[in-house]
Image (cartoon, rainbow, N blue to C red):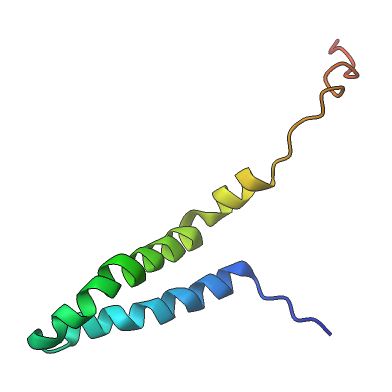
Length: 82
């Protein structure tokens, strides 16, 4: 039996897990911030932003990616409108 997870659920959990290091960056002692800064700025925050954007407007992206081009003969076989 295969369990199918919706993509939104997977994105939500990735988003939550990526937020944990950002909370550590914000609430860590001041002397440890330089250790957290590069991964937070260049990995965790952009990835969290991307997953949040995909949860918000992902349906538009999936719709655009799902569209297939119209076959070339389809226009010629179309009946004229009366």
